[in-house]
Length: 189
Picture 1 (spheres, rainbow, N blue to C red):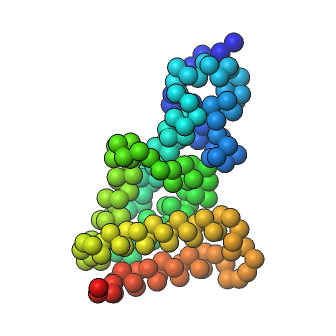
Picture 2 (cartoon, rainbow, N blue to C red):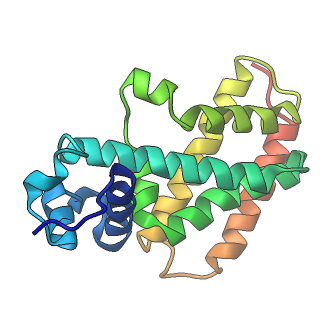
């Protein structure tokens, strides 16, 4: 018998928790139905299919990340803002690995335009205005920051740095120092 109280929001949150436990790629409507001890068909009034569930988890993750970043950036500028923003991504990935993976999901253009991903881009550009970057350098810098943050976090979470010293926190701090220096002295074309 189906449990009362299933909502799209409750299912998406449970799907996000499942992603953190087993990995985003392993999330399916079938697995979610098992978690709630209901038939898969009972979830289809809330979710179209597993891809719809994954898209909704991605949107949730983007929203959570944007909220955390906005809180972390309040009242900060320059290097402090850069470090706060970077640390939000790293901390979120560590706390919610499945959701972090979901946030990397490619969304269709309309869904992306309506998502909190837009807020991420706006916050990144606001940080970069503190470095006096203009277009197209600002776009290059947005791509650089995203690549460095995601690349480091992915390698760290995959154990890529666990085999040697120095401590990963020391390296992370040095990377943020280097990014700040680069942004302050952005090379001319």
